[in-house]
View 1 (cartoon, helix red, strand yellow):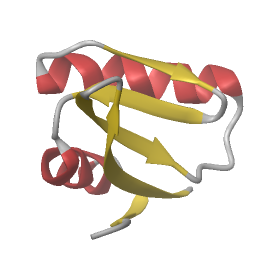
View 2 (cartoon, rainbow, N blue to C red):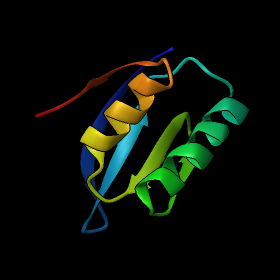
View 3 (spheres, one colour):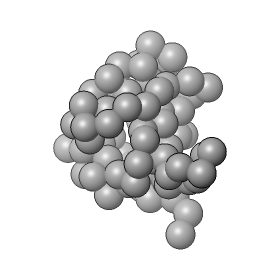
View 4 (cartoon, rainbow, N blue to C red):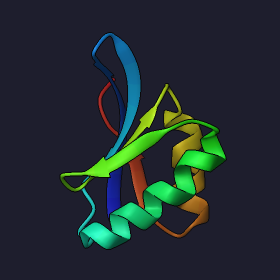
Length: 76
């Protein structure tokens, strides 16, 4: 699976979005359950993306690559 990781402001807070995966909702939910505790924050999985509270783009990129995903940073 390939994916993109970017940070974005939502409701005046920064979140890290993991998008672009060709996976089922259950697989994306499972990925969220792994990433959130590794970053020590909350988040959600919906509409085909994982949203983690805070700016963890670099950390999540490393975690995804360690897990065997082909991930790249998106945006600036």
